[in-house]
Structures are given as structure tokens and as C-alpha cells.
Length: 360
Ligand code: PEP
Ligand code: MN
Image (cartoon, rainbow, N blue to C red):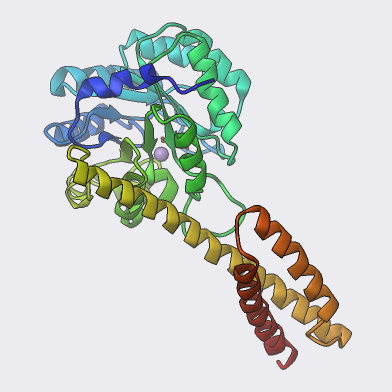
């Protein structure tokens, strides 16, 4: 599939002077809860009011959503506040009900995007719709699967499209609930510059105090909008309590964000620079992360050498690594001098780590 300008017509038509904002509770809980949050969000930057009606839970036994009844509450939201409405659909029956209740934006959740059968079922049920349909990234970092979702929808003649980046689950411990792996979103954006790209900092962070920071990174990386879970009493929300913010905090977050406007050539230059710098920051963080992992393995080797009573420095192994890396570096446009200097520094740090272990 190629980049298609028509995919963003719905977004351009909104003519926004700020990023698109989708906000509202993780789950619709009661009619009062939904309407109260909606009214508190009414005269803010929020464009679409979200609420989960059917909740995909990783483990059974948690709140699984109020079901079709909640769609009536979303209709009331639209009638009383004028905000457009948004919810997650996970099968053909959900689609039918959502369309009957005139939901304006439907998204496919991360647990559904992983299944081509489910995505196809949803695409068939939505065929030809002029509603906006967004695809969340699959729970695993697989760009092809994510794009496959968009392709299935586009082929079903659905043209108002977009993607939501909500991070990826990982086995490793991390400060995030779902690690962002920004490079994947950047790659997607390079391939499909006109496909609206929305960040969901709520599910990436899992913690409300990290939402501003992740939102800022997203905007610096040229994301088109944000989806932020919002509740008047976050701590007592029936799902995702730790990550929801109050409507008041949402307004504050929108105020605190540095939003780039691309209307003069100087501003255009600055925003391009900010974007490239944000990409560099992502890569630098990855470098430190990778080096940290490398040193952990060095520590394990140190422990092994200690048991085997072997010396730290093994010259033949080191020369072998260097030779390979110089060739590899050349193929990526890195000078031999640079690769040598960098690997000497890495090697020295590695020796220091191992010596510390041998002496312990
Ligand atoms: C949600 O948006 O509430 C949700 C369940 O998200 P995800 O599919 O990203 O886990
Ligand atoms: Mn949620």
C-alpha cells in the first residue's frame, strides 16, 4: 500500500490550531459518570469524547465494560455537549451497535490488531463507512501487523483512517506500562506521512505523572494528536485508575505542551529541527539502554571467568570483535577511526566491570 493523502481528509477538515485531542474515561461506568466528565471537557480543546464500552481485559475477573447500554450515554454526550464520540470495537456485533448509535470514531484495540481474523471481520462490518477508524498498534512491536490493519480497512473502502501509538508490552521491567519503541512510529510516519498518527500516553505510561512528558515527545516527533484517559475521580475509576487524569489536569497538560505551528518559514525550520532532535534523543536513549545491557552481560562473563579462574583480557576474542565491527561500521558509513575509538571505550568499560567482579 502507498501513502494516500485522502486518509487525513477528516483531520484536515477539522482545521485545528492544536493537536487533535481525544479524551474521556477508560471505561464508561455509569450514565452520571460519563455525562459529568463530558460536561467538564466541553469547552476545552477536546475534539472527540472517548469511553470504552466493551473492555478487553488481559485477565478475566476485571470490569469488562457496561456494553451496549453505554452507547446511549455517548449519544447523550453528543446531544448535550456537541462533542463527537469515540469507542473501541472488537467484533462485527460491536460495529453494528456502534454505527446504530452514531458513534463518530471507532478504534481497533491493541489486542484486536494482533489478529488478522478479527481485523478483517471489523473491516467487513465497516465496509464503505465514512466514520473515522483508527488502528491501535498491536501489543507486540510488529510494524507489518499494524500496517496490515490499515490495509484491510483501506481495501474495504474505508478512507478516514489513522493510527494510535499506545506502546508495546515487554517482558523486561521498564518505567513504562507499554514501552514506546518510538522508532517504530517514526518508521511508520516515514512510510505514510499522511496517515494521521495519534499518541496514547495513558497506555504507554500507565502513570498520570508521566503523561505530559510522553505527550511532548510525541508532539516533537510530529504526531497529529493525543488520546488521554480522563476521569473526574481517577483513583476510583473502574479500570486503569493510575493513568487517568482529571479534566482539570488535562487542560493544564494542553497548556504546558509546546505546540509547534508550521506557518512561517522560520517556524517551519524550527519545527523540523525539533523533530530531528527528538529523533536523535530517541536513538541516544536506545544507545544507553543497549550499552547498559551489554555491560550486564559482561558482568555475567566476569562471574563465569571467576569460577573458571580465567584472566579478564582475552586478546584473540577482542581482535575478532574489532575486525567484524570495523567492517560492519564501514557498511553504515562509519569511519574505521571512529569504530576503533568507540569500541576501545566500550571494551575498557567492560574490563572494568569484569575486574570489579573478579576482585569481589
Ligand atoms: C483503551 O483504550 O482503553 C484500551 C483498552 O487500550 P489498548 O487497546 O491500547 O490496550
Ligand atoms: Mn484504558
